[in-house]
Amino acid sequence: MASVSILAGLTAFILYQVELHGSQSHVCPVVEGMEQMHASVHAFHVEQIAHTLFWSWLAMSLTAGLVGYFFAPFITRSAEEAMENLVKSADAIAHDMRTPLARLSVRAEMAVAKQENLETFAGEVMGETESLISLVNTYLEIARTERNGDEEKKSEVDLTEVVREVADLFGPSAESLGMKFIVDVPADPIAYSCTRGKMIRVVGNLVDNAIKYSALGCTVSVRLARRMGRITLEVSDNGPGIPKEDQKHIFETFYRGKTHSGEGTGLGLALVHAIVSSYGGSISLESKPDAGTTFRVTL
Image (cartoon, rainbow, N blue to C red; front, top):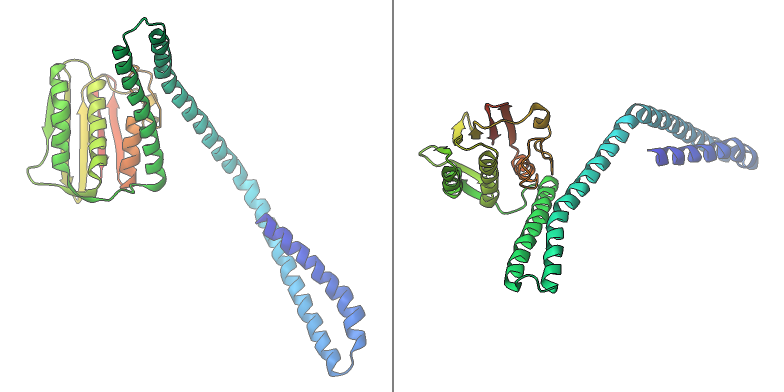
């Protein structure tokens, strides 16, 4: 808008000079009769164009000034917040990569000094490398999903089968920790157009978190239902709950609450939020101290 305003102002100034000097000093004196009338009409047109551009320039200048005055603080604040989030993300990535890289460095030094069995070293290198690759891939998946949505080919997926598949995967782990694992899904299929792998990640991350942050003997439940044309997935536990100050940040990339145990990367819930949002759905949570947490996905 500023560049257009400047251009319009310069053009108005030039045409004013043409109208005031050129049309009076050069055009009108050299023509007579009909030609002089045409020159006068031409000068009138030049004057009208100059007036129009001048007032357009003035209006755009005033508008640009008002917009800048009222919205500059918001624009500046948004830019500062974006930069702050970028710095936080970079710090979090560096922090999460530093630990496995440090372990790799120590193991490599021990292997070079022949203080460690090469087969053991190779196995640990593979494990740490897979953790780093998983971290990077998950972060990239979140970024792509937030930017472009789900670009993979979608199909009609039975969400009841997805929930059962995740339950079969995590159920034995929960029961081995003395937890009660409850799965409640309808008998009839619930079809939804999506990418199967992404929905497995949504359910899997929520169930994994419920098990990971619950105490021994707690109950973890997964419920799927269709109500009023909407599909609802609820993953609940009766564990320690999430502090209120952490709840508003829980879906942010790399965020770890004060009660974080040190495990994980802080990317699981951010990925869930990105995937659900890409399908036009929503995710919310209800949590109370020592009363458990419920994550609710609505599609």
